[in-house]
Image 1 (spheres, rainbow, N blue to C red):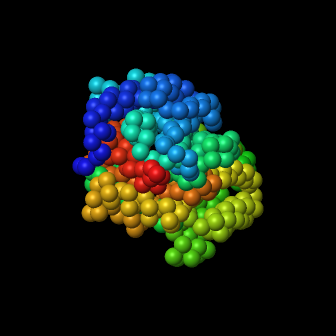
Image 2 (image 1 turned 120 degrees about the horizontal axis):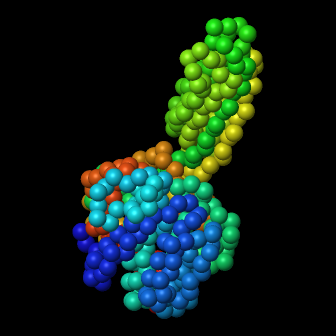
Length: 387
């Protein structure tokens, strides 16, 4: 796989970084140890500025080029997942119940590799802002960084990110213009009736039939309320009720994930969910409380920047390994907030065969890190050519 020669020279060092990070995963905003490791490496490299404590544990580092000019933002997420690791690797997580099951350790390594190269060569004008972000998996750290003003504070003109993709051929880049990933909302519904003895259900108000009817009713939204060409997902993923076979429970609950691409579809989904649940609650004489979490927006690539990123990827891996018209997917990503704040693009980088994301046997393919680092580096040199 073609990578920049200088980045290839320190591929083994990058592997060491990644495997160290893999052993010490941290969750959500509490990525302090990870951030400290990143800052130590950045100081060794000689970046021009380091700003810590953004979005609690995030880091922004600045590398100045040869002349004045625009600032390009490059983002890597840092957080892990609450999963017990099952890789059996010698560098497996040392923290029970936590692991890098989504490859964010690899994302950090890619960006550190690009940073080392850019610090050494400085073959670009303008500036690079390295955005090391916590809480992608849960908490919306990308949104918090935007809200804390990183785009304005560091005068970022465009922003780019990569996510590894196990199962995609090694070295293949995929992206598209427009919507790449879906929005994600969550509904948690608590239904309350009147409990009692299961032998006398007429003296009770059973919440279970109400929940069953609500869940069935929600399944009609996609088939009867959403235009067939507007992709959407509504999946009920939890139902909990009852403690014994001879007790009618007082309460029951269920939860669902809701995903789509268009704002108007997103609003309609929420509206119909409320209408169906409230209507069924009245019909079954129960009360229903809906906790609706308006989550990450869709990840929407800007057309010009998506085309540019794809052209850089072709330079790095060759035209045959770049799909710039990939299908969009129902997963979600809080890089979406950065793309709402600035033009930019998000890409997937194939890492070859292996366990899927969020699986306890997942492990990032270290051979992909120099490819991602080369992409970031060439993107900067191409977007900000030295004068």
